[in-house]
Image (cartoon, rainbow, N blue to C red; front, top):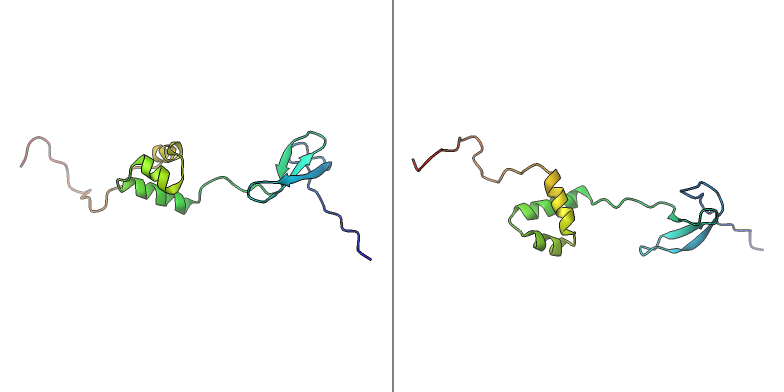
Length: 110
């Protein structure tokens, strides 16, 4: 005889009732659920939509090495708006080999 196997559905993330049913899968293959009380769909462990910090650093480094914004967007598959927002939030990097300690000369040539 088979044991009675019941699948525990999680409580609704929105109204917290236990009246939920399975409702298909996401594009990434995660189980979706729908609440019968409020009608909203949810995933048990949604995860995060943020980029990995190492990946973000790699993308910004490529941009600062004179790759165009459209090129970075096309190569890495990241929206131009996202890269622009990151650039506005990040401090300006110092160029490699720049002599940051010497004062800039004003006026003409020495």
